[in-house]
Image (cartoon, rainbow, N blue to C red; front, side):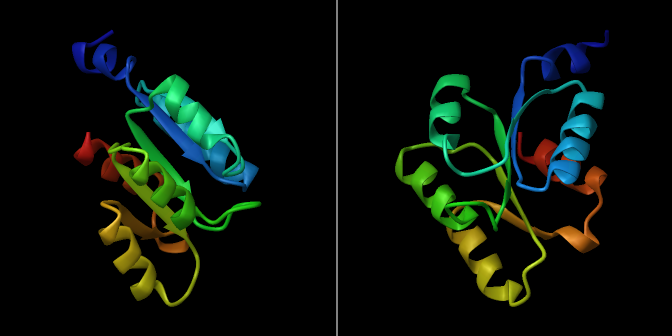
Length: 127
């Protein structure tokens, strides 16, 4: 195992995405790169996962059961969590979403025009 892959092995990425296929594909892509991956399908319980597992970065969908991704990210930031975050969404009107993402020190990407490799690269640049 190379040193960079060894170091990544200790880095955790939390993928919060309600689409099981996309969540699994993202998780697999991060695992291929040597990361430990945690998965959640809803906002509920994410604060507990973050507190106990201390992920190094977060990939976050905007539309989630029970709570939207921006509200969840606001809760995380207000609780003192500063990990890099990439927000994914297919929502139109993305200028307001980009403004929210910037305000919350995260990056916004459109799901339909962003590859899995681009998501991984965006996280890696911020780690």
